[in-house]
Length: 86
Image 1 (cartoon, rainbow, N blue to C red):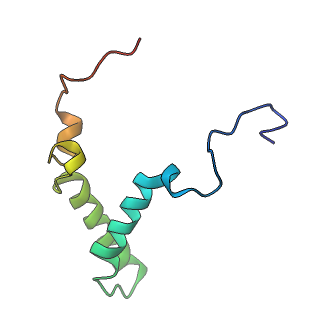
Image 2: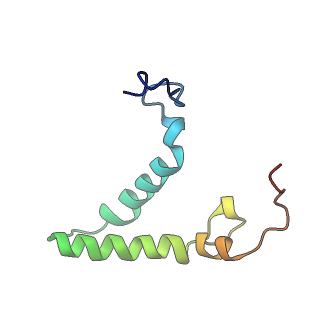
């Protein structure tokens, strides 16, 4: 379908880890820091526990890539080092 529409596919290799490294890192953290440590017995328990972990990850957990700010803090903090797009 994409080739018929002459759309260039942007991924440079099929299934390369580097193409999805940020989301793969999130899933790894979720599994090792939440799912594997809790014995969720029902889907609703899993939904509640995973939801709480994602809230913690986004709102409280400092990230080294964000200057030790949580993603929520980094989003709310204006960055003076950003350059305007041309």
